[in-house]
Image 1 (spheres, chains in turn orange, cyan):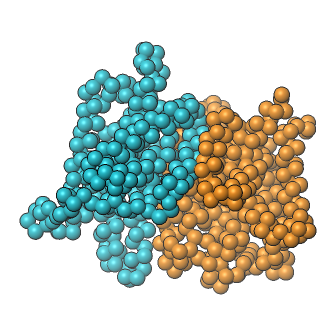
Image 2: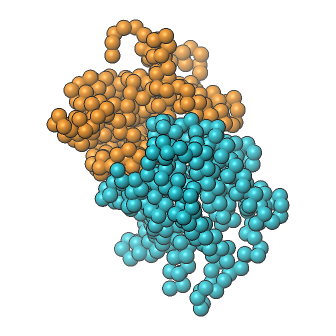
Image 3: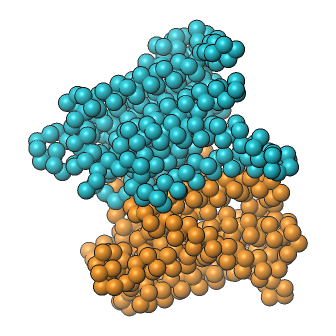
Length: 315
Length: 305
C-alpha cells in the first residue's frame, strides 16, 4: 500500500478510468452491446472483490460463493413477484438474508479447514441450489422472471442503461474502498495475521473463529448486493446462478487477477469476461483456448496478473 | 416390497459406480495431494470412448476394453503433460488449473462428437430381466454392473492391501516425503496411481453409459458427488470411500423413490412432488455437512498425524 507509482497500481488506475469513461465511449460510437457487457462485468467484479476479501485476506477458500448471487437475486425476484417493488426493501432483504445465511453456514464451516472447508462451503451452496430448484411458486428449475426492476423512487432509474451502469460502478468502487478500509484496519490486520499463522494468533489471545466468521459474513453481504444487482441486470434469476461452476468462475476471476491484491479481482473479472466474449466471437469453441490458458496461467503466472505486473516492476 | 428391493439394488449399483469414481479421486488426493476437478472429465471420456469403440467394433466387451485402455492412456498423458507440474502447489492452483481442463475437455468433446449426446445401446446378451427373488425381476445389465464393480472393488482392496505396489501406495498416502526418502521412484508411482484412477473413472463412465445418455457435462454432476463421498469417507481412505459411496448411492436413490410419497402424507400433492426431488438432492449435502460438523476429518481419516 505504498504511494510509490508502480506498474500494477498504474494498471489498476487505468482500469478504473476505463470503467468510468465507458458509457461515454458507448454513447459516442452507439455501441450499446459493450455497455451491457460491462454492466455484467462490473457486477461480477463486485462479487469477485467480496470473494477476494474472504480468500485473499481471510485465507478462507470458499467454493460456494455463488450462493449469495442467487440469494440476492431471489430476494429481488421474490419480493418483486409479491408486489414489493421498493428497491430499498429489496436490497435490504438481499443483504440481510445473505448475512444470515453466511452466519449460519460460516459458523458450521469454520469448524473445518483446508480442503474440507472448500468442500463444505461447496456442499452448502449446492443445498441452496436445490432449495431454489424446489421453489415451485417461484419458477423452480426454470427460474423467475423479474418483470419490474427495483424501484428507487425518483432517485435513480434502473431501467436506464447508463444510470444502472453507474449505480453498479458506484457500488463496486464503494466496496473496493470498503475492503481497503477493512484490510488496513485493526480487524483486517488480525485477519491477515490469522491467514499467515492461526496458531500464533490464538496464542497471543485473539479469538480466531470470531474474526473469521465476521469476515465471512461481510463477504457474504457484499456478494448478496452483487446478486441483487445481477437480477436487475438480467431481469431474471434462476438456480443456475448458484451452480458450483459459477462459484468456480468467481474463483478464477480472483486468482486470475491476483488474490490478496486490492484491484486484482476487478482486473481479473474484466480480463476473464472480456476474453470469454472475444474468444466466443472468434470461434464457437472458445473454451478450447480458455481452458489451457487457465492451466498456463497457473503453471507460469504465480500471483495472477497483478503478481506478474509486480514482478515487471521489480525488474 | 418389490419397489423397495428394486430401489435398494439401484442405490447399491449407483453407490458402487460412485465408489469406482471416488477411489481414483481419493487416491490421487491422498497420495499426490492433488484436487483433481477434471476427474469427472475422465468419466465422461470413458463413456464417449465406449460409445465410439462399441459402435466401431460391434462388440460391447471389445469396445469396453478398448475404451478402458484409452482412458488409462489419456490419464497417463494428462498427468505427464500437465498435472505433474501441479504437485506441491496450493490447492487453489489445482482447482483453477483442473477447472480449465474441464472447460477444455467439454469443448474438445463438442468439437469431436458434436453437441448432441450419444447413445450406447445395451448389449443384447444382457438385455433381459433376471428373477432375483420369487416375483421380483431386475435388469441383468444392472446386476452385471453390481457384480463387475464389486469385483473391481475386491481387486482394488487386494491390490492395495496385499501387493508391494499397494503397500507403496498406502505408504505414500500416509507419508509422502518418507517414501521418497527411502528411494522409491515416486514420479513413476504417481503416474501409475493417476493412470489407475483414470481407468477406474473410465470404467464407471462406460458402465453407466448404456443407462444414461452420453453427453457433455455428465462428469460435472457426478464429480461433485464423488467429492462428497471422499470427504465423508475421509480423504485418502479407500475403505472410507467404499462405505461413503454405498451410503450416498442408497440415500440418493431411496430418497428420490420414497420421499415424494412420504412428503405427500404431510403436504398437498402438488407441492410435495416439486419439493421432493429438491429435498432428496439436498439429503446428500445435508449428510456431508453433518458429518463434517461432527467429524471435520471425515469418517475414516487416512493419515492421522
